[in-house]
Image (tube, rainbow, N blue to C red; front, side, top):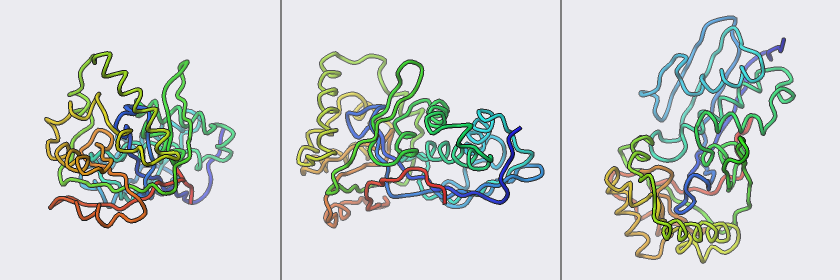
Length: 298
């Protein structure tokens, strides 16, 4: 029977931006906003403490997403603790397309493994990533949250894969976060069941170009971030988001809907002063870098 470690364990997990325009459900970036979490095994019961972003809207019981992810990871390792304390300091905005749910899931599975003595032998990184992507239902946010950096991900032969690729150091990112969120289920519900072959072909070409642009040819980012499959289709749920994307792109700024929205992610260079000045009234602007490190035990 697996044993549990004494004392608390701590993890930080980055925000993520998925899709990046044409890379629907396959491309994702880790960003330099990090949630901080701490957990420890108790003799009994469950204590959940939450502060920061989304604190007023999340449960404090077994239905909390981090707790659910921890329980799933404990099951994977064959070890359920008698009790748990979980403390969350959230920085990643909720329901804004910056991967808050993926960060919660990744934090949960990493914390659970760290609480089990010899957890690395019971659950490999590949197994934890598979579990996290299963819990989320798609890998494009989970992959960069787990591994960091720029990740290409998908599913093959009943397993999820993630391929980490380097990012040109000249590339930075600015996130424009609106005051009101949009639930991912609502945004996904606006997508059509089928798309024209010509649109799919155009998107495939731009997704390939985006990999080249992010890894070493950022001069192609504007063309590489054009999308045909999901951004315009989501406009009814986030008209101000699409309006900002179009204004920025008309001025030559590579801007996209971050994940399912409604945050706008714009790529910049080392000096983002002029870009951050474009933040609409009432929105919050985050001047970010691409985060090379994923989930990190402190």
